Length: 251
Image (cartoon, rainbow, N blue to C red):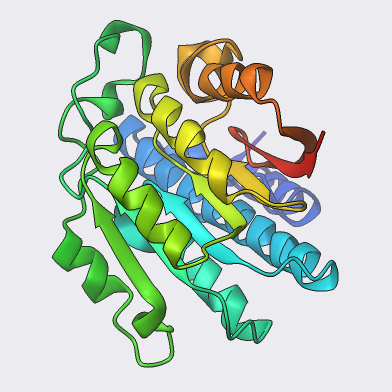
């Protein structure tokens, strides 16, 4: 096959198969890696946005009135998605709670079993940076509250009582804290703020530990559901390659 025929074949494949990369033979490994990262980030964020669109449709149509709680707020992307959908659905009463260390990942006692990017101090967005990312006049910023610190410290009795005095009830929850050790106190803390219809999105359900559902965030959630006497959890939507969501209801 000559160069002209090869070019036509590549063009035909690209027009018939939109996922086909016509110039992949000319790309270096580093160029392919950069293109893969860009493609994955774009598609993963689109998957997450689609989840928030559906979840907010669900809570709106089912009249599940409550607040948005996010555990793990690096880069504030999912946090902004939630605010955007609340604005679009005109949920004027919703408040937005951001729980994060704001100094990156905590020390991980089981570091060899998880992903390299989950090393101590990685995935860090400071509280000031987070505030700047949601500091837009239209983004309900007066209703955004940050709770800083590692969850073993910040999700304490005082925080629980403060939120209960404010009548916080979870409408949608995003848990993006990656590690079993981080997720365990999150689920125990959430128990008092759940209601019928709360949507819980676990961003890293199948991430790390080679997707083992008995370890990591999935393992922590399983332990919580096994021990929980008040709530059950129905499987809801899958999000991308790693995420999974559930709908809460009373036993």
